[in-house]
Length: 56
Image (tube, rainbow, N blue to C red; front, side):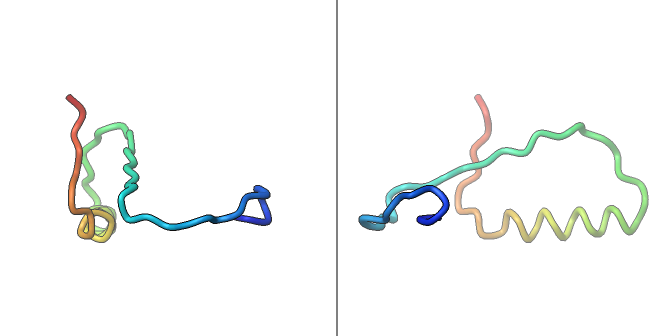
């Protein structure tokens, strides 16, 4: 990143956090393989998230 953007790290902090949101079309998954893959991906993605924010 330093080379790509021409920036230099001056320190680190644990106080800054980031969040991301995925927007998708809600649909019913029917194929067993697709359901299994989607379920595993959700568990892996969200298991380490300490806080999940929901829009007001």
